[in-house]
Length: 192
Image (tube, rainbow, N blue to C red; front, side):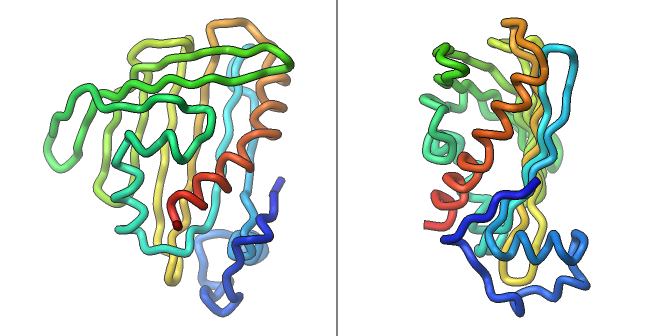
């Protein structure tokens, strides 16, 4: 399923869709501002999603913003706090401990969540988030960046199971409804 962002459009000549990272029609859709979604179940009470979008900026510009974790409150409207608790380095990868808090409304129920994450960065390629503790029984996320012509393809995959039991179908529908708007908001913040 895809969602077109009428504000974000790139000339079709910016990237040759036949030599791209995705099937030609998906590349055309991305370059026209669509957010590609793959929503699926992840346990009986959880959900998983992969969202892909094109950013008309070079990877180094995007990377520097993504790894300033306090800025994540600008990327996702539901995140109310994001702070690095500890910096560490292992070989070529950078690792951090991160705290995030969010406020989300599901079906007229407002929920406050907090999460402590271990973050592992592979310079200008990927960021992996893994649960240390928090409001989920499990949580993991991967963010990858790939060059695409004069811009970057960002792929964000998340799998989570909340501590509050809720059928997987409800989680999937909430993701399907909210994530495209959140990704567009992220793109606007990253590209401004």
